[in-house]
Length: 396
Image (cartoon, rainbow, N blue to C red; front, side, top):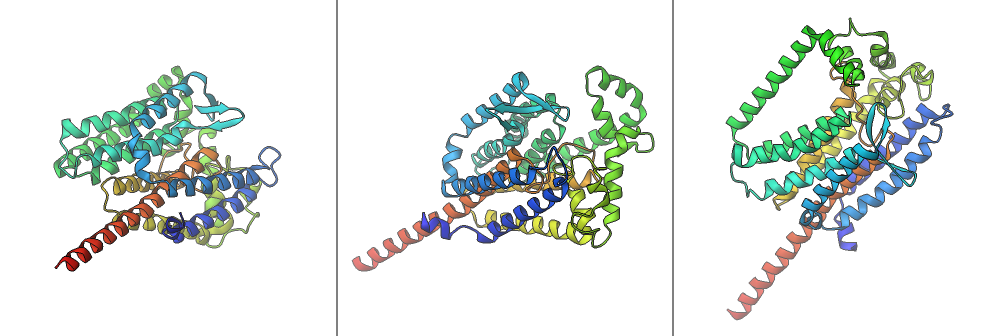
């Protein structure tokens, strides 16, 4: 175990510590005067303590152990998603939480890692052969579509879209043919363009339909993105105030715990989904840039580990995790500056949330396990080769 601990990437560990400190500081600023969420900082500290335990457990256990049982893990994950549909509780219009003995669990968050592991094992089994569209790509898309449909039925658009992003990233590095990639890209771009034009052209009909299926809040999230001039005051309230807060931060910010919009609670959910607004308003462009630099450094370390790994499943796992993080960072920040629609997606390692944080820390532990055990295998192979050479030399 001591040998394994020596092989841990302590630079990555240090980045996680800095992100933890950033999260606690920003959450405290957003909630210190709130009667309802005043204990969020202490709760997040507990989540981080548990998260680092999960990190080291995942790092010290050989990641191939989990891959042996990935089919059962996938089925178990689907069962949890279905269980949410039966007994799950609703929060912010999404039925996605299980309350187990006073502990709230969001299976849709956990399933991201499950999907990454399952798809990685499937792609690794192809042994770097070119993927066939019907033989390989279609089944993998089917594996993704099942949880995607369930989570969409739970009204959780943000997590459902992350499944698609993860799948497309893994297919891209899974030796997909260029013609296949071009075909899928053209279809996706066409669907997006047609969808946007149709939404604008038939807005009233679409709004009536969403209201009939109890999805009217989707209109409130899409209108500020596509039709801000025609959106209702209620729909545009969140994104408009978030943009004003970010703009008021300027270069260096209004000062810690002095953000006018944050401290007056004009921006909703500043401790969770809107936490980037706190960073931008109170620490300005410089603070936001430093946070993005931390994310860049984290992702750079993950990519370096993937390049060092010689086992087939390892790089797939890491690239899936990188795609998940990039999507969440881009979506969370983009929805407050007008680039993306408003969704309930957290900012990794910063937003308040136990399930999200524990899942992200487990993913970091999985990456560390790949690094630790790949080096162990390399060292053992080197020792074995040296031993064979020594025996041959002695016999010679």
